[in-house]
Structures are given as structure tokens and as C-alpha cells.
Image (tube, rainbow, N blue to C red):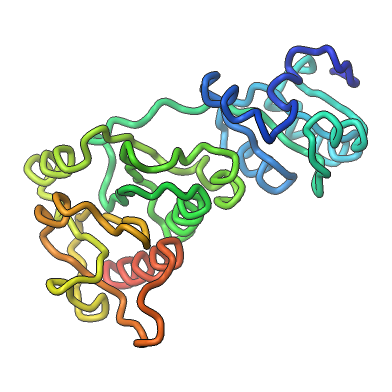
Length: 261
């Protein structure tokens, strides 16, 4: 097990986190930041490349850490030196580098499925994933215009719940939705406020469906709305036109779960 050696190449993945995302992405890796998030990913069984933490946190979680990592991949460092290495003042000096899993084959994902269309804000992506996992949904599709769910900010907002998601990736979301609708009989439901949408509270969710979520600013692409079987909205007080998509996802997914039960 390493006490700290600043020349250890394993530390390169943690150096100056404000600029490390490119390295993480190119290495097919992601960073967990903080004790709670790191423990969630460790306990999930995901593949972990290394862990960096203070001695007291290592001793606190020694059994779990040593069950997942060999000694040379356990990096122990005083908090002051950790702060200098990563370039920020760490509130919880425990983090890890995990291997990003390959995307799931979309056509193997089990219904219900959540599809994210054009959601570029990684906070929103992380929030949706946390809501989904918390409410019992695990199948998620991101399209080419949506932020990666494995960015540091998304992982942080999701509190590590991405470790329990099955994430597929679509280069052409309209085409893939149409194929899943045809092959698996899935109902496509888009969450959008327009002249054709019905109230969430008047809609009875089917057993098998894909719910499409878009950004608050741009909404769902017109070509996806055109192939949707139903468009639903959350009734709002006239003083507020819409909700953040992460907040909306919690309301919609909770309603879908209650109807299915």
C-alpha cells in the first residue's frame, strides 16, 4: 500500500481537477469525489482503478477498500497535500478513479426506459439519474446532444447512483426510439408542454414505455415529438411556466411508478 509519492503515475488522474476531465474522458474513466459517493461506487462492484484518501478515512473503511483494491492502487496522503494535488480544498478527502463501463445495447434495456434528449447541463443529468435510481428505474439512454452521465459534476450530483444505472447511448435517438417501438411494443411518452400535451395526472401509464425528457430551455426535438404516442405535462401555477428538468423527472417518474404499482 502506498503512502504518498507525488511522482506515482496513478496520481496523474487526480492532478488539478479543474483541468482533468479531458484525461478522464480519454482514459474511459471517471472520478468519484467525497466519502459518500466513493463508498457508493465501491459497494456497487464497479471496476475501480485507484483510490486516494487520508489515512483516517482509509482506516475507517479498510476492510471494504482492501476487498476491492490491491495495495499498490491504494494511495494515502495527508489532506493538505491532497488539496494541493487536486487544486481545491476538499471537504471530504476521499476519491477514486473508476473505469467507465461500455454502453449497454439499447435493445437489451428493460422497460421502463428513460431517454435524455439534448440535456447539456451535467447537474441536470446527475439529478435525473439520482431520481431514476431512487424511484426504481435503471434503464437510461443518452443521446449525442446530452452531457455524459460520467462527468465529474454529474457523478457528484447523482451521489454515485450512476453505478446502479444501465446506460445506453444513441447516435440517432429518433431512429432508435422507432426501432424499439416497433420491435418491443414500447409506448413513447414525451414530457413537454404544448398544444397536444395532456396533464400528467390524467394519464395512465402503460406497463412498458420510454419516457423522453428534454432540456427546460429547448425542450424535446420536434422529430421525436412527432413519433411520440403521448405528450404529457405537469400542470403548473401560471406564475411559473416550467420546472427544471431534474425536478420534473422526479414528479413524472414518481407518478409513473405509482400508476404501475
